[in-house]
Amino acid sequence: MRKIVMAVTGASGSVYAKTILDKLLQIKAQWDDLGVVMTENAKEVWLTELGNRDYQNYSVKFYGQQDFSAPFASGSGRFDSMIIIPCSMGTMGRIATGVSNDLITSAADVMLKERRRLICVVRDTPYNLIHIRNMETITLAGGIICPASPSFYSKPQTIDAVAATVADRVLDLCGFENRSFRWGGE
Image (tube, rainbow, N blue to C red; front, top):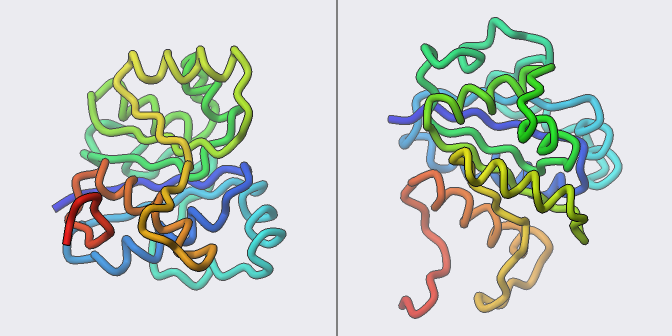
């Protein structure tokens, strides 16, 4: 069984965070614990993009950005995967430079030092050289950069279905059994 940290930053792409939450709840039998951290900007972006505050309706444990008593703030909490979705370039820059000034960046630092999965789902485009170098630094430290680049070979017909192509890839990266379109599959 797994322990998962999910962080939602203020980058555009709230639909990805919503889709991951929905999918994680559908596969609840595969994990023991799910902790969620949302920045205040993430809450505002969610409201702007999705037109609601439905993140409040999820039956998962939410932690404040400054709640360093959260179990995943330490390696002894034994959380094995962290998904930052969407991951703002500012958050990525702080992680890449070792600035652990809030629970998200501190938990990301824990994941890297413990050699556990850190998946940064970046949505911004285009990238500048600073972004690319920060991605390189995180990758060299053991993290995974997963751009929120949807696939279209499954012929998704809705925004939610497009977002699901990214969410399914992230769940695959976490090692979950997940039913999704597979290239060359039946």
